[in-house]
Length: 77
Image (cartoon, rainbow, N blue to C red):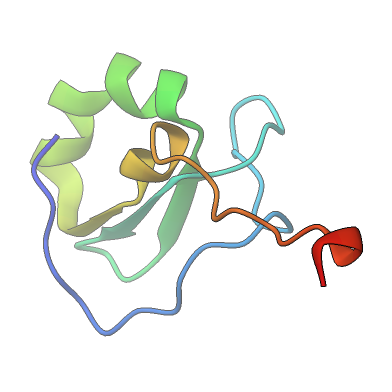
């Protein structure tokens, strides 16, 4: 997926896929001015069509493979 770097707000757990309701990791800003949100699965599935109608694509799917930051154990203090 081609990513356009934009100053858009990062996607959160509250952002849901317009197709299935799963957490959204892609925001597609349409040439017509609207926007669509997709989970990684549907973003990949519709990629060819989205590229034709997108002004910008915000792709945050790398968050799926990044390890979460370690949380310190309060007992170690």
